[in-house]
Length: 127
Image (cartoon, rainbow, N blue to C red):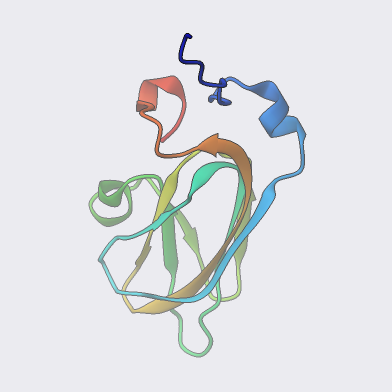
């Protein structure tokens, strides 16, 4: 008898992006100044919202798609206290860092049913 494995959705599975996303939320993340903190998702994302939830003195939050991007280059989005950013990104992780001070942040995402542990390269569209 042949061994059969049911197919799993992949990055190109359009239906995974047409359905509403599975909710993902993490709040009150302590983000160090100048050190990249990775937020890893269990499934490939449909959309991401990042919030700089720091209160008090100015503490910008840097958000990007690589550790190097938020610490040594200008490949990031900077959020001031109370600002947020939402984008439709198909990724398995993001990176956060403080810019001149430690800060706090929250991340909310809609997840597809595509397993982020599958071996996708950046050229396949999953950062």
